[in-house]
Image 1 (cartoon, one colour):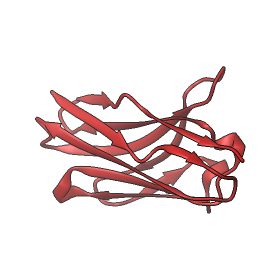
Image 2 (cartoon, one colour):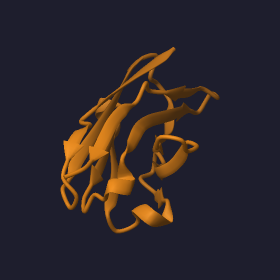
Image 3 (tube, one colour):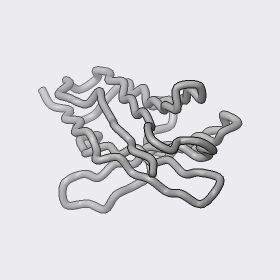
Length: 116
């Protein structure tokens, strides 16, 4: 079993920045894809960004150029640097990690609120 713990959410003004972190613990061998998703009030959960074990990245169109995903394989961690935040970025952000043996794990989420 893999346990994911997100941190770094909070309240930020429009145009500001936040950095989210997610660390895996437990049986965290063979981690493969890592990613961030988000769910805004009244909306479905959506992909924010993914990163493979080789460091290849993929972003949702609305996040390109503003968000950067990165990972530290030695720490079993994934990060999301969010810049130029907008009120519509307000959501609960979830970390997700998959393993090469078919495991698929989610964190409990961290709330990001963009408001003046």
